[in-house]
Image 1 (cartoon, rainbow, N blue to C red):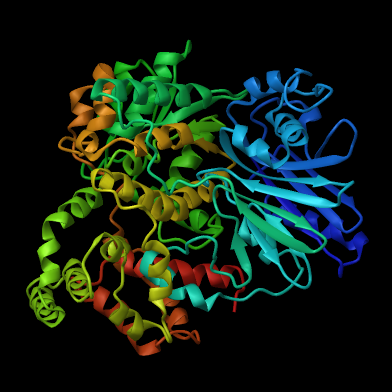
Image 2 (image 1 turned 120 degrees about the vertical axis):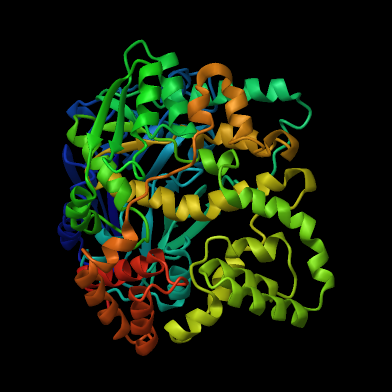
Length: 628
């Protein structure tokens, strides 16, 4: 796990490029404390910060060169099937190559490079891992940049008159010195609504993200982007199998995914909340490991916030070396400024991940497995039931829109909450169906509210990104919800926050539920086998007796803290300062932003802490990064 950087420019003098890339590297030092490298060739300069996980020797430092020095790679990530691919690449009879590749290291980096030399852009079809990398061909003078299928590892880029530049974090480009960057006001409505910005756009004008499952080729000053994988499909491989066969396949695929992700040359462990997802990962780790698994749980003395009793139950069952890291809400609060400093792209979420990651790293672990993705894949969120129930409400489309609007207003008055407002907004839609309703699942503000808060909002441009994300097939409605959740919340909030917050403390996080083979298979399972009549029925049935019933049937908690009170007391001055500054920005409707803050302080039930916090974070991030 590392950080990568690069600049190609016809306008910046070649002897200036190493200094600029060195500056970008310095901004990524937290991602790679073990080594740094900068390499230039004419108008191309590549940089790397290394966090050593596989092959700790200096021979695997980057930028890394092919044996003939024609190709140079900078790589961030882990290739989980690198050992099998290495064997194939050493066989001279395999593929089109006349000669085998002679490896000089034990790293997966060299396997990625050798695979590209052998198969070109088709190498991506062979990879199973999380990655973002750049390979420069000095003979063709061409860059090849790729991102993993699911988007676990980030890749930001800027393409303008001054230069083409890329990096693992957006701040490395912003502060590189190649130009002055400004706020992307076209996506403000999206950030207000969803607490994030959906790729390929970012909060900064001109800086984009390479989409998951895509690669870019940059040659002669021109960039072309190609998609090589899409989660937006319903595979058919599970359609003719019995339920017992499906469960067996899920078990085998998840076990294989866990086993692959345990390959490392450094101490590693697992986050353990005691919920179904993390417990499943720990259980399978213990099943395939000859050594005791290290598990980490954040606990609180306040029982309403703590999941420690469930984590202890799982740790005892699987005989793990369990680390219970006790925190008081005050401890958490003290670490909050560090978490905000580590935030690479503004987000309404993230501090929780930072605190868990830092505690895990301090316990001597460099890599940890996480249960991220289990909810999205196995129908763990309430949205799965809501969207399924929507089928029974098709009669609403026979009611005239003006009548539905009246009904919505009545509901909003009787139910004076954010939820009541959302129901009223949905009832006023021209048509009520999956594509029109799903985009409102995670919204924090309605269009009417956005008009009051910011000038010239255009939320419909953002909503149109979410509509039509998934194919509509009756017996695969839950898979359609999974595709939408993976493509929106998972990729643009959970994974981005996990990367930026864990790498802020140089901790690598791996997610077994996000193995593309497992995802492809589960998306092909019909609703009748997957509907959560019990929590994550398909997953728990597939694991059999691995998990105790206490873990399966426990209430879903998440990592909950007293944010509502913090914003009104401990964090009040911090929030007030940022809300005042936000209201003074040229895109804000000042009185209404201040009014929103006052409504929150006065306990208005329609203004929750989450509706305030991501606005506070936005302004704080803009100030920290000197963005106009």
